[in-house]
Image 1 (cartoon, rainbow, N blue to C red):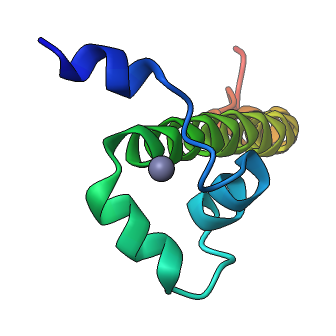
Image 2 (cartoon, rainbow, N blue to C red):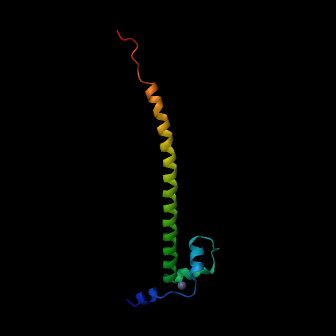
Length: 94
Ligand SMILES: [Zn+2]
């Protein structure tokens, strides 16, 4: 496999900042897209960058979900009092 050596080489046509911007879709589609079509090395760099961004996004979502569920936990603790009021009480003791 001769292509292995090629894919391990870091392509100097597109720098890391541009790869990052493209991965975040903050670049207008243009010459970079044409280059990605012919350069598996840069395509992989974009894929890695996107995976990293996705990881970060998921970590943030998990963090926010945890904060919301903590707030819910406080609400259910308050609601517990209602059940005690609904309990049947003995009316007469003879
Ligand atoms: Zn390239």
